[in-house]
Amino acid sequence: MPPRRVPPPQGQGRPIPPGPEGTQVIRRDGRRAEPTQGARAWSQAPEPSPQHGVRPGATEPTRAHRPQGGSPYAPPQKPEPYADPYRRQADRVGPPVQPPRRTGPAAPPPQPPRPAKTRRKANWGRRIGLVLAALLVLVGGSVVYLDRGLNRVDALADYPGRIGDTPGTNWLLVGSDSRAGMTPEEEAALATGGDTGNGRTDTIMVVHIPKSGASTMVSIPRDSYVSIPGEGKNKVNAAFAIGGPQMLVQTVEEATGLRMDHYAEIGFGGFAGIVDAIGGVNLCVPYPIDDPLAGINLQPGCQDLNGAQALGFVRTRATPMADLDRMNNQRAFMSALLAQSTSIGTLINPFRLWPLVTKTADTIQVDEGDHLWNLAGLGWAMRSDLVTTTVPVGGFEVLDVGDVLLWDRERASSFFEALAEDRPVPPELLTTG
Image (cartoon, rainbow, N blue to C red; front, side, top):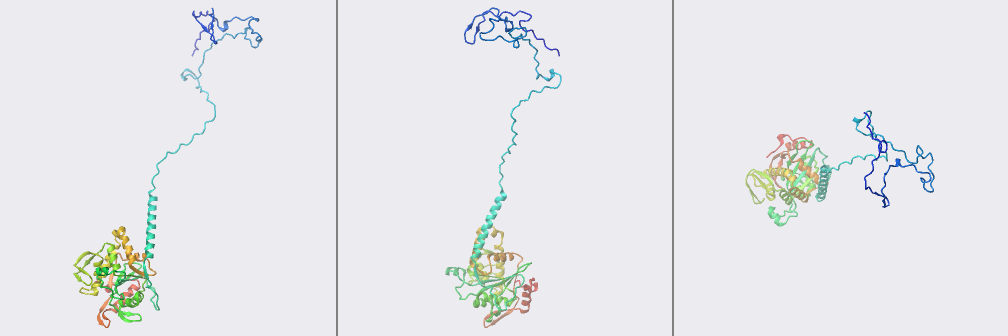
């Protein structure tokens, strides 16, 4: 590409046109300069004479500082074409020219990007765990508190010649006719008939919980004619009146050949209170029962019974089979009570569960080695698949102690031998009604 033509500088080749007339020159100090004729460029100024061209006190320029030709003035300037190194690449041939890089202090290293703040998610697992832990502490504290409030008695005391431990777990459940702690109004409401002196047992049951399989609940008629240690033969409930729980435990162990591991006793008032605490029990009455002494008048059919009605149902003898019907009623009631107590509706309802637990702890009496969790284990074992029966009966007699019930010794021996060996009772030995 041919270079551009540059016009020659002024003053070379052609005359400089005069400046416009009337041009005024203003000096830096503000004075107005006189107009000059034929103003010339610095390069056209004549070379001053030696005597007039040097300021007073100044030396004449040396040859080294003079321009060529001996003139003290600057040589005439020769314009040259300007080559832009950063013009567009299309106007040049060769590699592109990079602009010079700016030098300076090193830039600080780039900072890593700060993570965006995210909303903290709620840790529901931890919250639920804390709630469950608090509930466990509350329940555990309540159980310990109620367990300390249980009424205890030394019922399972050792005695000479006591039967050794037998497989499985055996409970002796006793329902006494004790009116302890009841007011006259409560006795009248429950038709207890007033204080009868030394307490007797209206209900005696043995519950055998095997290591595996269904539990067995055996009713022992209160008029059973058995040997009472040191007292001769008498009705089994007389043992309780003579020597209390210890005498009754020893009498039952020697009659059955089973060693009792736990003991629980409840009176009239506690019995009715537990039933009312769970809102009553549903029982199917097989026949009409009208018994003013027990304070009930029930019609046949399934119905809800309150505490007073349930107590009269398990106490009445105004039935065709008297004591045998009474035992059947007691077992039916126990099954209904356990079903209601361990139902989901009771366990998840604090307004039923808490009164049930507190009423049980206040009114039940256990052995010194028993605890509230032992009672819970008993109820859980009896909640389903429970075999209910009575001792094989041989007949009835009237003796000097009154009307008594005799066991069928041969069948009763085989019956209790199966339980002592932790085996199911043979079906032919069961009495269902």
